[in-house]
Amino acid sequence: MNSPSLAQQACIEPGQPAAAIRLSGISKSFTAGDSRLEVLKDVHLTVADQAIVGLLGASGSGKSTLLNIISGIVKPDHGQVCICGAPSAEFNDWRTISYMFQDDRLLPWRNALRNVEFALEAGAMPKSERIRRASQALELVDLNGFEASFPYQLSGGMRSRVALARSLVTEPRILLMDEPFSRLDAQTRGLMHEELLRIHEIKRMTVVFVTHDVEESVILADEVAVMSPRPGTIREIVPITLARPRDTTQPEVANYIQKLRGLI
Image (cartoon, rainbow, N blue to C red):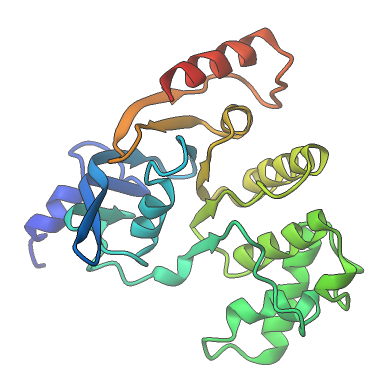
């Protein structure tokens, strides 16, 4: 058997199970004309398998860029990304990572079932199997009966559920979410929080979500990674040790909210 490469060795902490995600010394800059914008600087973050981790920070702190680096959409200038114990350059199971964007990005000419099925069309899966799995994903997010509905016929919350079903239909090990509920009203956003936590209990995937909403981070996360203003780095990682469900009227929840606000 071949010995692990130095890159592989760097992804594994001796005596510990492989983390779902490990970032070491991540830095990233973008160039526009003669200007160079440093977005991330020396970011270190470990996300345990099946954990829910929030990336919290002010606008422009590099949260979305960091999520794009985890997903492989953007490459860092410096540092290493490890996914499930393997360097990102050697990781060969990218289909097990799903990305839910801030906008639902539903295709208006496709109904709910076909929007969810779209996530499976790149492979060689038979259409009958794609439809079966898309139907199951819609049922998982409590949208059975709305398979034939088009996006314009759905409320904002229902559209978010379709987008979530599309992210889940590939049965991901890791779900990345970029402020997916920020455009919803407070009541609908609360319902989507409950929905995500319910599905996480069933599927046990790892979740990393970007937010600038302190209350949302405390309600959802096992840990909150607070990012500093640009160039973004991890200012502090705050474990949220409260049992779920969590309510913002609870004194313990309010204490965490106050602490996180003080760190931003």
